[in-house]
Length: 275
Length: 275
Image (cartoon, rainbow over all chains, first blue to last red; front, side, top):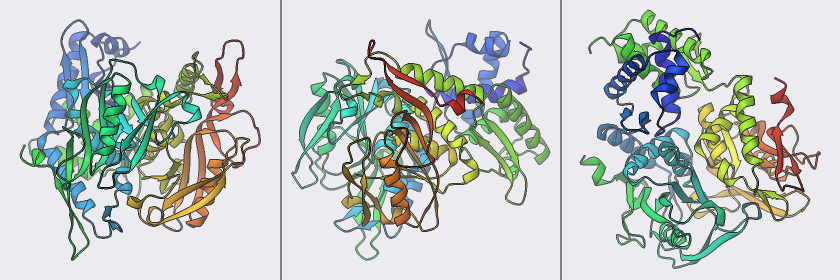
């Protein structure tokens, strides 16, 4: 193949790296693709890395060792995290989002690809070191955020269902306490083949009130002999303070509603404002 | 701000464009960010555009006119579409995917971020000219693919539910025939506020057998006075040939199962192999 000039390589190289977040590419792969020497590709990587750092676009990193190479990770800076979480808090505080029963309407926001991706980037960046094998969520509303978290970690998404389905084969089904003050017993099902014993699970959902659904997912993982390495949600309610699940991290806190305006009072979790 | 050199701009420019598929950015936006002249940014865009074309990475296009600028669209070439669809067909034909009742296990594949994105890129590329305002899907299994399709089109995803939920507010609920030979009556619900009259809907799902669920979504859109501009699925069964919904496009065809090996017989739709 013809030798490709740097100006023609940088765009393609950036796209290939960012299309496969958290995946390690060898320099040889790019040498072959572009007909360039390793030292040349290394310089390209340094240029992209510097450009990403300067404009807060995530990290392009060189990984040393036998299985080494270069990878992109969508790690936002503390400043970007604050900006994103403040923006989403503002949108969630728009008038008209309070529903009968004291519920907050979030379905439009959680299903926006942009927002789901930004939430996924922030959530994933908290758990790289835990090296989950997959992300687990419970249908339905948390799926977009969980999918994007899984994509950023380069692991599959596993979706627990309210009931087992013929097109998912034999399933493990558990009962759990829905929480949120209702104490209702609900069921949760997951295809047997979806998880292998000993795998590490990262549990992600959009919303936590009592924490019952999240604890249900933790219990479900016990049935599969899988290890839960983290529990992350987009929004947690301030009350009740004691959740049925322990150790869950939330990006945003829903304090309640302003009774005069009917607006939700939402703000980023303290750990993200104090960074 | 300091003037940024081309080598340092190309990575950031590529990332910003590909992070916001189908969204038009003005050249002025980049001039300001990089402290460069419009002609310089134009040359950058041309370099990225050529690099993307050469390596089949989608299109970076200049859009003329008052609302013009530059945008990235994830339009795969016919060759890339064939390769992606052949790869997915192969995976779906792996042994062990046939379930009791003649169902095909696909949940692991449809929930892989990579695959969902590739399916989303192909599906979106069929509907740019229809300019949908949103993508509609029915929970649960189609959500990852529908989300990625919506993200590629830069429109929101709207998720119909099997039942209305307190946290989605007042809803429109319809009955529909599930199809697939069962003639079961099912319900489908969607929050009133999710769709505005006159909007254009693109309906996306992962699987079509009888087409009943898809026709249900078409009927649901009538209730909202929305226009359906397309119906696309990842996999359609060859039988029954007559579907309850008309005009649906499918990327893959499930012919059935090889009774000797228990493997699914799956191939790309003819319109994608003959391109």
